[in-house]
Figure 1: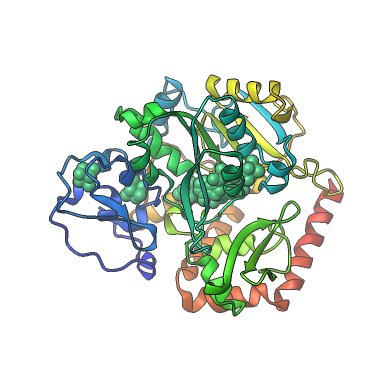
Figure 2: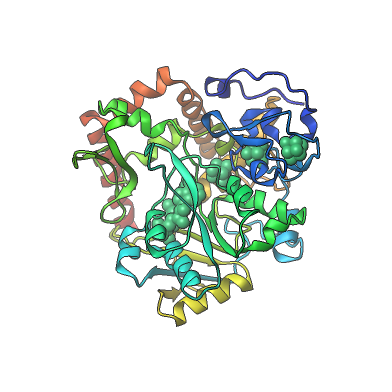
Amino acid sequence: MGRSYSSQKAYVDGEALLKTDRKILGVVFSDKSLCTRCGTCIGACDENALVIGKNFYPEINEDLCTSCGICEKVCPGGKVDFRELAEITFGDIACDDSFDGRVLKTFVGFSNDERIRNGGAGGGIITGLLHDLLKRKMVDGCIVTRMNPEKPYYGEVFVARTYEELLESQQSKYIIIPVNAILKEIRNLDGRFAIAALPCQIHGLRLMEKQKDPVMDKIKLIIGLFCASAMEPVVALEMLEMKKINPQDLKTFNFREGAWPGNIIATLKNGQKVKMHYSNFKDGAINYMTQLYSPFRCQTCIDGSSEFSDISISDAWTRDETGKYIFKSQSKILVRTEKGLNAINEAMKNGSITIEDVTRNKDYKTHKLHRKKKGLKAPLRVERLRKKGIQVPEYDRKIEKYSLRENIEERLETFIMTIGHYRLFRYPLYKILISKFGVPMIKIRQYNKRRKYRRR
Ligand SMILES: Cc1cc2nc3c(=O)[nH]c(=O)nc-3n(C[C@H](O)[C@H](O)[C@H](O)COP(=O)(O)OP(=O)(O)OC[C@H]3O[C@@H](n4cnc5c(N)ncnc54)[C@H](O)[C@@H]3O)c2cc1C
Ligand code: SF4
Ligand code: SF4
Ligand code: SF4
């Protein structure tokens, strides 16, 4: 067994020894740094022995644990077997090792409902699809997330059953939320549900399906989000601190509020809106936030496109030759299963969404950086750390060829992410980046991007 990733200890407490054998429990009880905080073990434990604990890690009540071993079987933290997940999802192990995974059709599109489109992170396609399923009574509820109404700097999972509740769930919360923990409640509810989830959460759902957990019979559609990385839950609190805002005065906190692509905005109880960063979401803070606040498990995660969803949704960042976005306020849609295709076709026929088929559009250039980050550098990092004897997740996927430059970039990024685990470094660094001293960096970044597109 390799050694644990030491810097993770900056976030986690010392673990008390457990009475229960750790080998039959999810990875969080043997090595927290491998835990994605997906919440699957909590949702799968029939005995109510697991709950969401400190920093959103699972915690155990050993008096309730019967040592059944289920939580270990459904845990995607320590090992992701792409072929096994392909078999559960698609019925065969043929795996498309390209970054996008298995895709039947690719679209870009948006919700036809103005409130849903304007409130969405991209084109509001996820919420548009979920709303369509509710309208057609294909599901009774949707498993989604929102910022916690009592503590708006943290996220939470909930079941939306109405249009208004779905609107509450919109926007990307770029933070850890143990979504699958809600399956504990779903177990006791009647009805059919759809879920929007991140890649690691979907890995957990598919492993529950393999265990033939009856709760999975209630999940009728899995909509996946692309994911470069989530951030440590402390990120919003630290941003508030930097801006000298008392968390008690906070009404809402959104990562992408306002006109697309949105800004990080805190709204105070007195109605004042405070922009957390000079630039918009895309050109500004998110670029360094995901470096400084990325959990170790996210840095070693190689599924960036929710390969085992029915439908995967991402932003549509495609630009024209002048650098302008072609699909402003739209989402990119990868349809993976017949079930997913049927949901898309019905939503289109119903007038809920507008989509354009770009399956054969060779010029459709997008996600180059995301692909490089998770399809190339993350696997490279996993291998490099494994060789150093550090405990990393196991994958049945080989690393692609990489250049010297990519190798150096990966090491540099790992260095920044490592120091980011320590408040002593990340706090002052981030404070400078979001101050007026960070503005020239954003201007240079925007200028370089424009030049790059003009050169094409
Ligand atoms: C942590 C994270 C990383 C991402 N990384 C990328 C990326 O690198 N590239 C890219 O193109 N897209 C990424 N996305 C997805 C993108 O930001 C949009 O969420 C996506 O395009 C959907 O937009 P929409 O307008 O269709 O969704 P909306 O209609 O706004 O609906 C958003 C849905 O996402 C769900 N959701 C939001 N946050 C979470 C969360 N933390 N966990 C689980 N579900 C959540 C909500 O419950 C809601 O159902 C990421 C999203 C998250 C949460
Ligand atoms: S009862 Fe089973 S699923 Fe629950 S914590 Fe114990 S071993 Fe895990
Ligand atoms: S199932 Fe998810 S939350 Fe539970 S230990 Fe495994 S990775 Fe962590
Ligand atoms: S990067 Fe991977 S592990 Fe982290 S939240 Fe996204 S899907 Fe989960």
